[in-house]
Image (cartoon, rainbow, N blue to C red; front, side, top):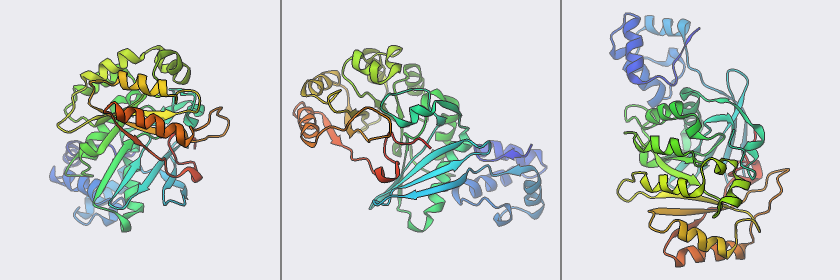
Length: 340
């Protein structure tokens, strides 16, 4: 089996070079070529000696997914359908803005969380993604848009899958993304979004390399949340918010509370007041996300009046609350629409 290079750290590539009878620094050069320069053709890695390039060609592979389809929305959002080596498919979303770009990546093929309002849930969990497959999504999107890159890149782990149920591979990928010698995306620009896996949140809190944390709440009492998100039966709201209060935040950093509004389900003024109470004293911001329609799901987005009223109540309670208009709806690239 060829050595799969994507997903390996600089130290691991240095050890590989040494095992092949090369100076260890050749591994660092290979690392830089793969992650910083985005060179994936061994012949183009001109810093490496010919003999090493030949051996890489014979005994290693750059395990990039294939771009099977690419959909571009009217707002310039781009959804990539990527095919993995075993035939599974995942999705990655590119969101260009005036001064930056955001890449929304998947951490699993499918998802086991079974949230009732999310199209991805209908896929079920197919398998975990490797660290290389997670990182490759960022590399492919950056390379495909090389001519129009802005100076700032944000990464959100909000595509297919629950990141904290693929903990080891996700943390390895985050380390690779944040490495200044490679992809070089600062941790303050990487956000991990979870449905509320409490052991994972507590474990993440102890990590040296720690991304920003987003928690998908979506209801203000356990009865409604359990109906929308079965995970709430195991990790109820009070326990989840207790873990969030313990999560260490950097100076000026806030926890992100994601709240998908569903008409006549969780969008009432009473819900807004309860949400304010739940988050009282927590250094958080609230992203209000009107539900994005997906075929076969029995929900509706809130009215504009109800959405504005919900935000106003939160603001009056001195909470930072933003209405997040999901982009790429016309190509099924918006939040909750990723279903391959």
